[in-house]
Image (tube, rainbow, N blue to C red; front, top):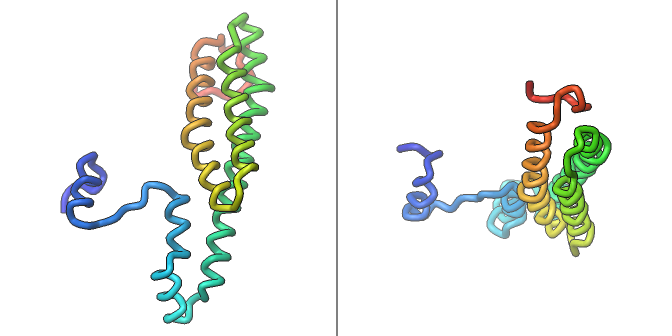
Length: 155
């Protein structure tokens, strides 16, 4: 009952003893929880080993997808956005810093000790670091004249 999307809902859910998962990476981990693997084994759906393997594959898939997105973002910034800003005689320091941040985030993904660590680092990269870089790129798009912007715009 009520609005499950409101800002008040997480507080109410806590009061009712309802747990929630705010991250896709956190939700992936639930497949391998002992109570879930026991249920799947009891119902002859999957063994514990299969649950763990499937969780690992989900982590790998997520981290791999984020890696491709990040590499694409770096290429777009370096090959299109920075040159467009230079053509408009605008400073590019914020964009170059954004590229460095995304690359550093990718390095953390690659350096993680296990697949869960890589997926967790990828989540930070996608939802925090790349969002910040996107904000810088959106600002550049607002300021660069359309005839100098080399990629599609929202308009």
